[in-house]
Length: 275
Image (cartoon, rainbow, N blue to C red; front, side, top):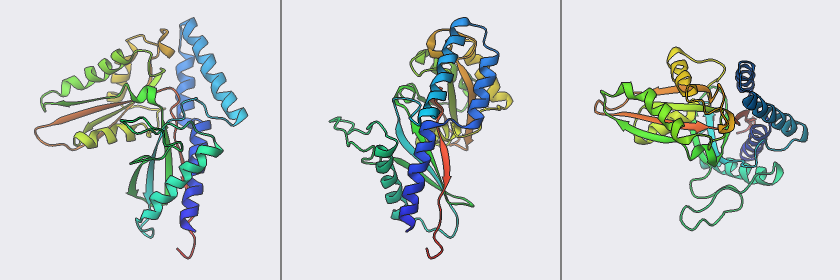
């Protein structure tokens, strides 16, 4: 029974994420549009808003690239960590593949053979942590913006290079990740952990930034890349930073680039009384 509930919750979270953008992102987007001065950029924002409206009206995905799937799960103390959780999520992806529907994006990295159902070896990625409630957060991630993401292993003395590395990342990316973007920045942890921090940063509310995040965001916007790379006041809607302690000899920094379709949704899993 629990595995069925996990599958249903997974399918529901994917559907919501694919069709509707979170409220904090819409507030940030509206704020961005209000201060835009470029006529071309304004026209692009009209297209983006129409895209969002039509996706909701027709109940279809916002983007043709429905992404590769990543899940963040919170488990309360009474729910044991078992293989059922992974099996339920995988089954939920297979169901969503047909019901949403999703574009089959999961392929073997060498042969490029498509699994056909958005699952495969180590796909989807599932991150599980303790929490007060049993929740599943779906985060579809498109390939265009993911390809522009970068990682650097700086020396401990190079903290001053963090901002320039983020700005350089968007300078290289240009219009390819479908700006205006949201940038998730991981600082610290390890080689593998810093990328996870950058990814998790994209789940933070984007309608507010601290002083450091705002400083980086302003620097990125000075590039003038603009929506869809056609120029404008805003290239980056928000920068979100997530930190972790690191080795005394290291300063890992990762930038996970997210296109304007900043998709994610959280659903609580119903827990049967007898489980």
